[in-house]
Image (cartoon, rainbow, N blue to C red; front, side):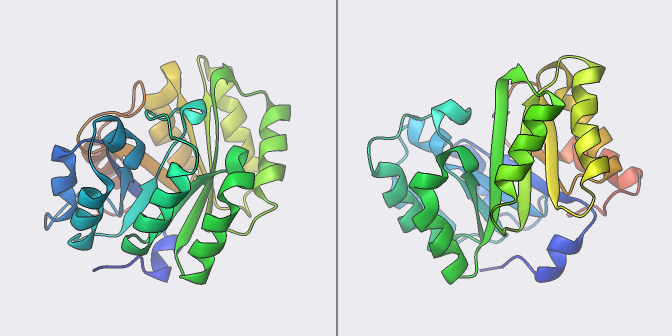
Length: 238
């Protein structure tokens, strides 16, 4: 199975293709996909009733570096995890992937997974989301401070942005914290434009869907790859 090369994290911008449906899992075994990293949204698959063992079996045969995301509903996820179910699924699937997304809000629950990822040389994306309220710069800085308490491969922040001024908050973070590997994106009306503006200004990861959008106004990764490649921000991963 392919693994994420260390040099991949040094790319100006890493393209992430999101998979959220059973049919979308076929991208894991296809030869060419327009993304550096494939994100498997396990919460979406579980909502649709897909057994964890079946997901594990498909991951066993993947042809591309893969990121696991088991999002909680409070962070914009699709599935209501039962008690310790989420941790058990993390433990079952993490050996089959290359990276995992963990939310800073849930760190007290997922610290064992963070340690497991470190012990097995898996990459970690530590994320924070403000999906119902716009990010003020003060709130954004507090989020960055909490994220920086942990050494991981990337810090992801997604914030609601209805106006250009809302988007400027995310731009300011890139300008003021150039030493951090920040992966920033907007949700809401400014979502699509943020996927080109922020990578152009230094955001280290950009997300788009391979099968279906997992967030309102999320663009397809193929379209993003074409646009950003033409702008010289990154080379076409396919």
